[in-house]
Image 1 (cartoon, rainbow, N blue to C red):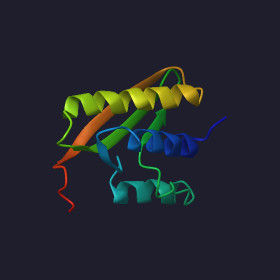
Image 2: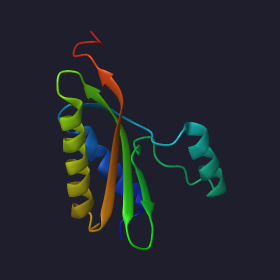
Image 3: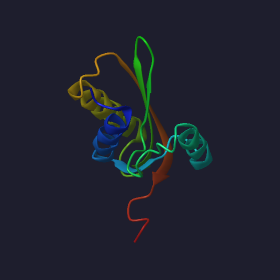
Image 4: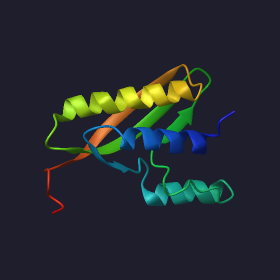
Amino acid sequence: MTTDSDLAQSLTAAVAATSGVTAVFPVKAILHAATEGIAGALDLPAPDVLVDVNRSEDVVTVTAHIGTSAGAPTPETLTAAATALKAAAAAEGIGDSMIFVKARLIAKPGADD
């Protein structure tokens, strides 16, 4: 069985590779994650694990916060990111999942130049 950390890492890679996604941000604030990590015997997520995975009895909830390019419509990028996450979760054997994707930053093309 895939661990939540491995699953989150795979999902992070999938959403980062989505066209129009410029960045993937941590869902949880660093202090919140650190507190959970200390409470979990310092089982901190790897730095490349930015997507949150939460399992309940009936469903797996996947949450991602992304940056999008202003060169592509944000609603379409959000849809593509959710589709990529759903497909990656299914590839990992997660059948029943709820996918939440939130745009936290919309970047102008070439803004980093």
